[in-house]
Length: 110
Length: 115
Image (cartoon, rainbow over all chains, first blue to last red; front, top):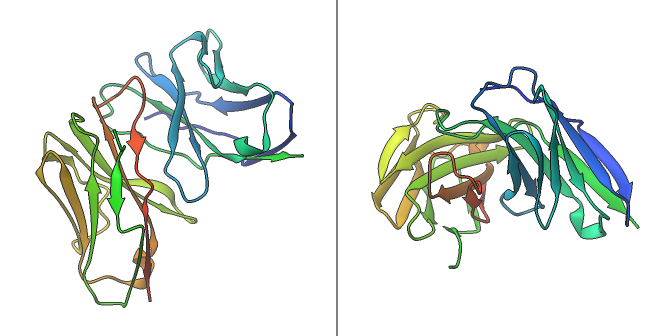
């Protein structure tokens, strides 16, 4: 499984766009990139998943460059309720399980 | 659907006692995962099942831990005897596939404190 590296923490203010970058230099050809969000006292929640270029849903966008060695989760106009830990995972259909790294603690301030 | 349901939400027990954590996956999900989360080690996969059969238990810390899935709607994680270092939040998750396109659905977890 490819190892991922994320910033330990980030601060932002309400209304700003937040970009969290994840490095995965050893990503394999059949690996996908998945992001989860975890609030205190809750289990992780799926946010978005992608393989290449750009994926967008109602919550976030995921940008993946051509070499796929990194990815960026973009949260538009964050609010206080977006304060959470965000995990980047790299896995594939043969992995059989998802391995969570240390995640990025995002704190949104008023 | 009510999502993945775990019970109890909180458990406090004395060292040496047996602890049983319970999980009801989402109906129709063929995969069930047990994770443990601590400040020191983060989220660790303990074991996962496919169609009620254990597939990979390499994350189970030691023989004191055991997990069963007697049917498609119920799984247990048992610790016997419990030790203070087992204190953690234990999450159960389920999914339609081994590598689901919409990720895993996690329960709210069971916070275990062993004193």
